[in-house]
Length: 517
Image 1 (cartoon, helix red, strand yellow):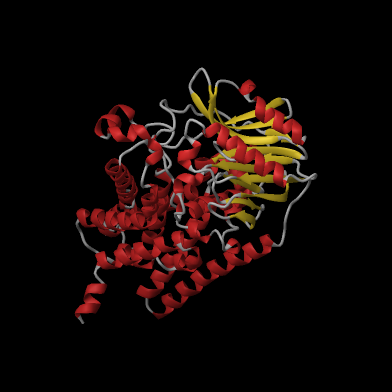
Image 2: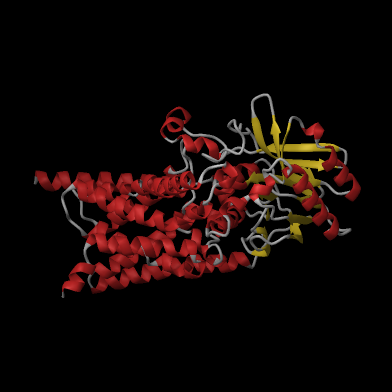
């Protein structure tokens, strides 16, 4: 009896719910778990009538912290931070601070659904309304992580679904918010079934099953349709250069030798575009005109080369994807979203004093300068858009590139920082979602993995595993058709928020009328 009583305590239910909900983001084979793992969370929020705000705050923080600790444990793979010239003790401090610090900050945001429902219960105990409020609170907690100088919107409820492409095609309509809401809605309905009487239980289960089935059915139909026009044969090169080697005094020569050798050894007559990843050229060039050896390589192979190159401008250092065609630099895309603590120091005046070791993490001494637009590139067969590494976790950046005319997307990235951690696969998963959202092929060119070709339905056509030297040669397709999501953006969350507001007003009016009788 005491065991049952212990297991049904709110903090125990929330602990297990947080752990189970985090598992699919590390083990993608457990993707179906996400469709039921949030049930204990909804149960605690909707079925608990404690009247103290501190309980709501504490429970929200407990769930959020455990959930993110279980997801962000990949920060441990950063140790040791040799490339930043940090001692082992300093490396431990930085890694633990990053892991627990970001888990604390992002975890605290999960107080939002708990606190909202706490105040809503003073007006109504309507389980359906509280469930909707919980869903909106979770989405809000996720979205807030994308704002400010500490912007890092890495974690999504649906991220572990990336291999189950039939279940996530709805992001082409409502974006990643949409599939997150669908998953949470199924969890909420299962919870309502658990706590309801027989008739309502059947209705809730049937509704949950119907939502799941309709979402799956739409996905299966969409997977059997496609839009293609002109094709492009690409070769992406993965040289797996070690970080310490890359950023050494001879790093530029080492990288050029490895990348050019792999390129020449695997070059085929039908290749239309060669791709080298982010920071494949680690030397900081003062201007694109100095890229003589890369121009010569493009000329020798008679094929355009798109490579990740760092340039120094009047404003500062920039991280770029540069299109080189024989003797000319045709276009330069500059990264729009920088990595906090990697490419710039957020809240520099404060954090550099509190944690001076953090200033050593930037690749260069000065902060990077961000670009301002999508810089669509013209290549054989169509228009190409770029995102660089960290930018793939921001849906709006890829969407803007497509709105600006991109018919094919390229992501150059340097994920060697992530070693062999689960973050490698989570980063790849973000690319899958960007592809489906906008109906575009996405080529992922990574320094040490995971390089991949993803089709416009999110299917991973070909990959190079982590730390394997090699190339991918594949045919990709342009398309100029825009998805509903590309045209409208994230409209589901604000629409449901407006619905919840109207519903709340109606409930308040009803309560006032009841009190006045």
